[in-house]
Amino acid sequence: MPTNFKDEALTYHAQPRPGKIAIEITKPTQTQHELSLAYTPGVAEPVRVIHKNPEAAYRYTAKSNLVAIITNGTAVLGLGNVGPLASKPVMEGKAVLFKAFANIDAFDIEVDAPDPDDFINTVERIAGGFGGINLEDIAAPHCFRIEKTLRERLDIPVFHDDQHGTAVIISAGLINALKIAGKTLKNANIVCIGAGAAGIAAMQLLVSLGADKNHIVMVDRHGIIRKSDTRTNEYQQAFAADTEKSTLAEACVDADVLIGVSGPNLLTPEMLNSMAENPIIFALANPDPEILPELALKTREDVIIATGRSDYPNQINNVLGFPFIFRGALDVHAKTINNTMLTAAVHALASLAHEPVPDSVLKAYNLSSLCFGRDYFIPKPFDPRLINVVPEAISQAAIDSGVARHTKNNQS
Image 1 (cartoon, rainbow, N blue to C red):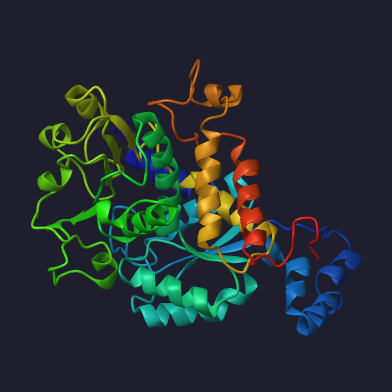
Image 2: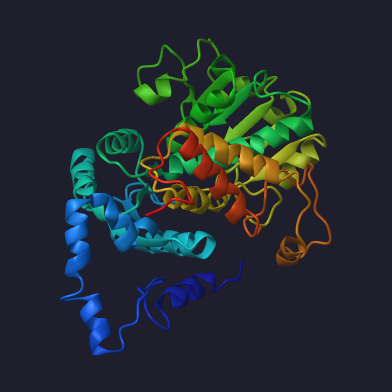
């Protein structure tokens, strides 16, 4: 990384105009007649229609392709509770990714509401104009109640990407990594380092996909979360182990999988050596993973490893998920994003990694070849097939599970 990267990043955000997003006009406004259609008196016609039939907002406004990215700034990237205003560059960045990868328009909304009830009430009152809500960078455990309550109150998708986006990509990668290792999800012994939003949601999704909850050990900064613990919240207690073991080192013994969503350098070579044959390591802390791939491969030649970084193979990157999940949901005017849809995204991503890799992907990553195996078991973010494969799977799952207002061929 260049020594002047800080200055480069600040200049990037400031010039030639501040920020990373803007609004564009989608209809002609060059004549008096066009203005009369865009505003008064023409605008009154869709107002009347929507007043009689709220569903018509999908046809006559931007609602059908508009997502609100909403945060209170309590858990921003690796920076912690920096507050809503300081989170705005991140939320704008998320809007850029929505547009760049799935052509979805997104507004970032930073809410000064650390209290979860205040946050919930604010979002509920402004949600009607959007086709979906992407909750972002909200600290656990409040994030769980916020999402659950908003899902119950609203009739549009409410999706906390730090939970479910991360869980989808982890699950897709793990399904394929287990195939490479010759193991099954049902029988795998899984250790999760990190008991926040990402870790809990990933374990929940893995259980719904077939993992045995009794084979999952969750570890936080104090050690293994056990049924006897009183320091944990109800979401962590759902994965509390009935064991006398207490340390990460003890949890690693004979483990098949270690998923890290915590912090740097927590997995030692000694811990890795104690794991089962063909151990699978998802070291996802950024920028410094729980163990560097170089050290892991030096320690054990049979290790199968992924990180959250773009400069190593097998990047577990949320951009593989949320733009395409929302694209599929918006295309059928879905009322929610449910577990059936998340599962469809997992299988779509996992299957895509088995297909021949397009030349455009090889060129983007300066590679001569790429095929399914230890160095490639999750699609690359710039794979042009993602925009077709994942949204189609999401849309069909929404239709099949009864949460789509329309099929893609019958929108009004």
